[in-house]
Image 1 (cartoon, rainbow, N blue to C red):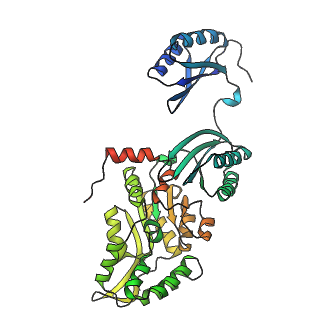
Image 2 (tube, helix red, strand yellow):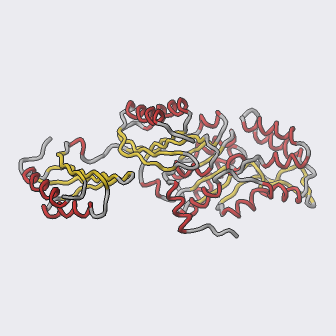
Length: 403
């Protein structure tokens, strides 16, 4: 369908070349001089090179005058200017958009070829590519229009396995900027170790407890029964032993950066753990975690009895805690994010709007929306579209206060 003779028609003004101050001002001055209506503007600057595109509406008879005004105003600026008519299919941009995040220690041209090829074969058109980080991992975010979400996820999951990279596919939209709740497992996710294994080492029953832990995390043993068995082996430990384990806990690389950045953005954070409140709670308080759910060890005169107090936080309990914390925070489930590594995290990952398997067992990776295989917990920020530059700028403007 074409516009009636003399009617305003859509055109695209493109300015490209070496960037410099005042180029946008001079271009808009030319359009204002000609009385041209501006409908849309996008600008990208890459290593000093500028691409500035403006969708305008003007009668075909004004085309020569507009081109002449642009040439006069931008003379000597070192940029090239084109004005082209737009066809109807290029106007409006109504197709649903998805965000594809590619993340790995290194991303080469072959990987980008594979990813972009899969997107094209799914009927997707890449509208924008942005590098989010080069440290501690490389990551890119691609804005894709026109592809089916499920088909895109399946195709890119195959490419991720082939290229040994992590790829996440999410629906684009304003919800990414809204308040979110992120719920993390503790052992082997927020923390580098399994707390029960650290306690077992102090008790002298490390190998026995570690074997039960591995079976439980792989989904081979009922979590609640496995937990009871391990806790019975810990009988006789004292409050001093609990304190020693607390003092020796090591956070996952990037954990403090993740928590600090998300708190600045207004996220609510929760830890839901099959571990123990007496060990995790002080650390959660130090980090500023808003919600905590974990198992409670029974002590008698400062000595562990080998029993647990109250309901066990198991696979179903973790999912229920996520729902409860979301309600308390006033956050819809669609805006919740769950992160975990073990089989007892699967229900929680499935309940959340976005489930992330973090260095997880294969059964967990298959159940999650996306997976991270790098050891840096702050890589989650890149899945949320937060760039490394933004993190570093926030740290400079608002340095962390260490108590």
